[in-house]
Length: 131
Image (cartoon, rainbow, N blue to C red; front, side, top):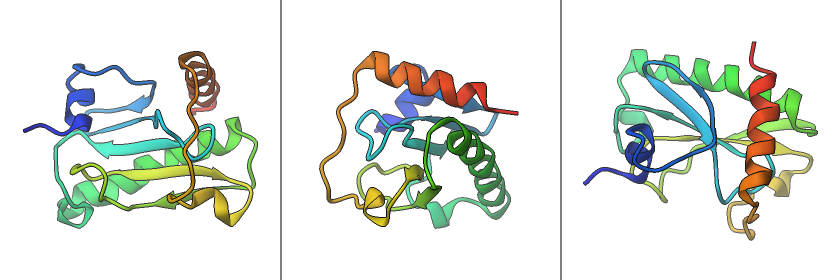
C-alpha cells in the first residue's frame, strides 16, 4: 500500500508545497514542531533513507539544503535543524525544523496544530525565499 507521502506526491492528498523537482518534494508538516517545519522526500517510495540509491541520496540532501536555506531566511530562527527518524511514515524523509533552542527538535514534545491559513502563510514566506 502507498504511504501517505506517496499519496501526497500523486496529488491524492493536498499539501502546502514548498519546492518540487522531478525527483523530490518539500512540503510543510501539518503537525509541526515549529512554524516552518518542512519535510523533504524522494518522490520514489523507499522506506529507509539508507536504502535510497547513492546518487539520489546525494541529490536529496542537496535539495534539502536548498529548501533549508529558504526556511532559515523566511522563519525567524537561529538555525534550521535536521532530523531523520523514519519511524512514523514508511517513506524516507528529512525533517527541517527551525530552531531557537535544542528542545525545539524534541519529537516527544507536543506538536503544534496550525490552521490552514497559518500553514499557507508559512509556505508563502518560505517559497518567496527560494532562489
